[in-house]
Length: 459
Image (cartoon, rainbow, N blue to C red):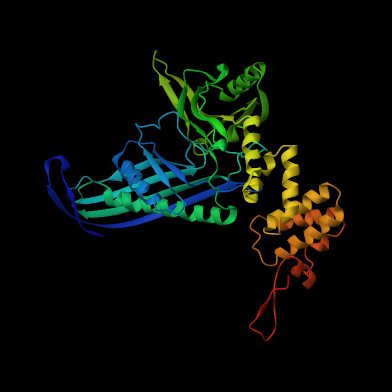
C-alpha cells in the first residue's frame, strides 16, 4: 500500500503540492530461465548496466525508470543508464557490462477513474551482450568474462484504488521489483561461483573504431541497433536484418560471397530452429543468428495488394553481431605490463589463455615462486610441471592441491582436472588420498594441540 504521496505539480511555478492516496492489490507469476557459459578464470562483469525499453507504452516506460533506481542499489553495480524506445545510446561509447531489454508482450486494462484493473505481461531479457545469441563460442582470444542470458517473464495482475499522480506507477514499481530481485539473485550466484572482474587498466579497453558491414550483408532490410567499444574490443556493433523468402538459401549465398572476400568460416548451422553462422577475418568476427525469443514468433507475413490476388511474403528477422578484437600486439603489450612490479598474480591468471610463449614462461616461474595461496594456482602449476615432464614436481604439487580440496569449496570442479592429471601420472587415487601431517605442515598449516588453547605455528 502507498498511503500518501506528495509532489510539486510544476517545479517552474513554485511549491504547488498534490496529495495522493492509493493502494494496490497485486499478484505476479514470474517465469525465469537462465544459462551461462564460462571457461577457466572467467569472472563476472557487472559495474555498468544499460536498460532498453522496446515499446513506447507508458507502463513499460514507468517500469524502466523505476528499475533503473532499483538496479543502482544492487551490490557492485556502479552506473545504470536508461534508454526509452525513441532514445538510443550515443556513439562512440563504452559497452555496458549488462544489457537489460524490456518488452511489453500484452496489456489489458479498464478505463475507470480511481480504480485501475490491470493485466500485463512484461518480458525482461538480461545478458552480457546487446543481443543474446543461441550457442556459445569461446577461444583463446575471448574476453575472460562469463557469458549469460537470463529471461524473466512477469504476468502481472493488480487493482489500484485511489488517485495516482502518475498512472501505472504502483503497478510499475511492483513489476520492476520482480525483475530487480531476479537480477540481484543471479548476479550474486554468478559472483560467488566465478568472482568479480577486477578493475583493469585502460590498456585492456579498445578505442572505438567504426566498421561497415561487408557488402554481401548490406540490404534494404538492415538496421544498426547499437555500437560500442569495450573490454578487449575496439568495436561491437549489433545489426538487425529482415530477410524475405528462403532466408536459409540467402544466408548460404552470403556466406559464399564473404568467403570470396577473404572471410573464413568458423562454424555454421543452417537448421531453421537454431540458425547461426560465424565468420572471421583478421581481428573481426561476425555472428549471424536468430534471436532465441524470435525463433517461433519473428516470422511475419507481409501482404501487398497490387492486384486482386494478394501476394504474401514471409519475413524472417536475423541478428548480426560484428566484433573487432584488440590485435595481438596491443593485447600482449597490455599483459606484459601485468608482470611489472607490483605484481598481482590473480590478474596474470585472468589472462592466462592469451599468453604468448614468453609470458607463459614468466607465469610458470611466478607460480613456482609463490606460496600455495589458491587452489587454482596449484592445479595449474601441477599441470604445467606435467607438461614439462617434471613428474615428481607435478605429483608433489597435485598432492598440495588435493589437500586444499579438504578445506576449500570447489566451485569450478577443479577436482575433475586433478583426477585427469593424476591419471596421466599413473595413480588416480592421489586426489582422494587424505593429506598427511607433513604435507600440511609444509603448506603452512598450523596444528592445534589437543586439550590446549594454544595455536602452535609449525613452520
